[in-house]
Length: 167
Image (cartoon, rainbow, N blue to C red; front, side):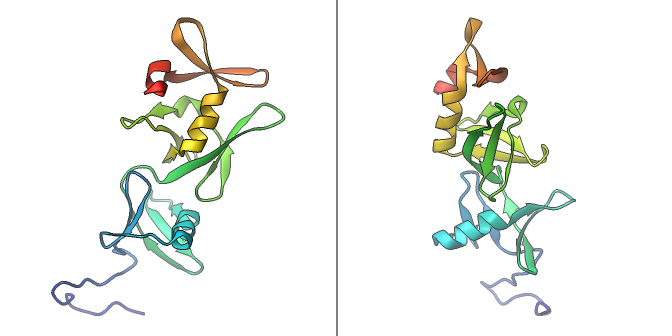
């Protein structure tokens, strides 16, 4: 269906694929036309349907339909941190995908939340409270306060300080 021609009436706007009015704020809350989206199933659908296109723009893709959305900061939430039997650390994201944790991209945001890069370094993710706790269980302090991610026999230095992680 083609959008109506001409400007929208006062106080209204045409919602198009290019201008959907949907945004994801820095705390990973969904909004539509500056109204919060509160229904849990819609939030779950939007989380699972968010994709980054080849031009670096975020889209919601639901079936054959899609629209661009504004992502103000992180696009994904790290929901779980897993350690495999081979001592590899992976993360599960809000879009229901899993990938290896890129330890080198770990950082602490100004609000104390741990973040990292995901989707081959193309997108940003924030850790949920549970995932941040799971990550913390894998961190050990080394000499001079340096932190290491310890998974089985593997010890990998992480670019986080104990002071930053403790807030």
